[in-house]
Amino acid sequence: MAEWKKVIVSGSVASLAAVSASTGIDVDGRVAATAFYGDGSNITGISGTSDNNFTTVLKNKLDGIEASANVTDTANVTAAGALMDSELTSIANVKALDQSVISGASPTFGTANFTDATNKRLMTDAQETKLNSVESGADVTDATNVAAAGALMDSEMTDLAGVKGVTISTLQPKPSEGAFANGDKTKLDGIDAGAEVNRTDAAIKTSIGTGNGKFVPAAGSAGQFLKHDGTFGTPSYSSGQRTQEEIEDFAGALIATGGTKTGITVTYQDATGDIDFVVASQTDQNFTNADHSKLNGIESNATADQTATEITGLLNDVATYSLGTTGAGTVTVNNGLTVTGDLTVNGTTTTVDTANLNVTDQFINLNDGGSAADGGLVVEGAGTSFGWDNSAGRWAFDAAGATEGQTAITSDAFAAAVVTSDLAAYRKNGNIRVQSGEVYIYVE
Image (tube, rainbow, N blue to C red; front, side, top):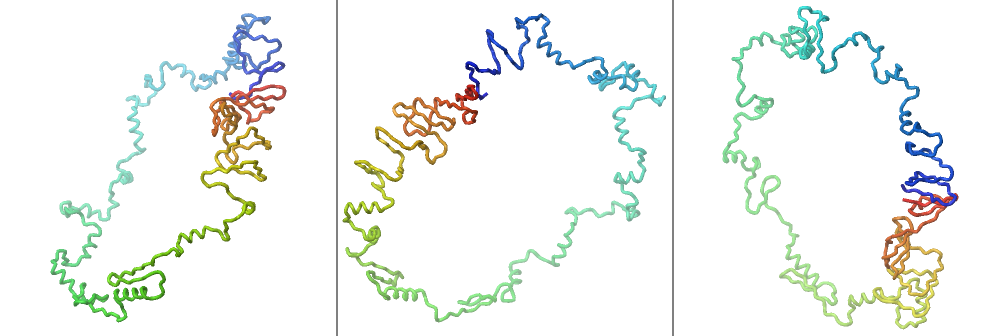
């Protein structure tokens, strides 16, 4: 069990959960305990002891006997489950039993107590079940019982004489196609007398007929169209409508000859209906799209003859600017560099090639902006590291295998912390607590 273990030093008062020794324990003083274990048979050197010593076995036996135990006490005997004389209605009859009467036994009984002296027999289980199913005062001729059993009573018949006079042989037999169900008569009434379902094509055409009085209109003449009223007629056209050719000729001529066109020629092809646009050839004086893009990239009032002083002054007026190319490249400062403001380095590696590193800050912040994780120092060449093991929640050592750029520490030892109170965060294996003059070590 993980807990603080007391370290016994000179002057300590020890409280031990258990002590085991094969050769004995020498105590110079007093030993106090809540209990001693064993039967005491090997205890020697105690004055006044004999073979009648009160051992653990005897004590356990005595503990199992209630105070003032009395095996003849009525209450104790009753509580133990004994059948008492006071509980029997006829103690003489019970004592006179000479055979078993429990379930499954086969006792023999006499007939002295049966009232039918001529036929003294016991009733079987089957006979008792049958008798129990018969109601008291059962009467098979009782009208109520017969009606309840499902019989058709005379009082329920409207024409009792007619029913009794029916001759089965005179009843109409059920048709072989099936009975005439509800709805069949209604369906039959809806069909016209003499209705046919197998008329010829000629008969059907005669019924349909032609003209407005029939389903199919009469035939029209060439050039006519069927109108909404079922008759045929000739459509009329407005003189203001134009053909596609007329429209194409008008539009083509308007685009090709109308308006002012500079550096471009427009020709209408009447045969195909196409319109051709031809741009005149360009010269070196023409302002192209590429020239326009280049001009947009030059700032207003730009010059190319500034002096070093002017360039420095311009740089000092710029809040933020970059040195070097956006790709590969190195900016070298040949002499001392003093940064009066904050220095921010955005990159993956910062190399400080100096013999001595002096940092005024009292605390170095590692893993800035990140969530809880491992972090620490690596000594290159030795392959060792010292850092925070986040999973263990304590400072740790890595004696071999540490490398530049590692993101986690492989702990093979931990730093022991010394605390003066029982703090949960320091309940780690090997940590030391010194409190109230005593020394404890935490063991997991």
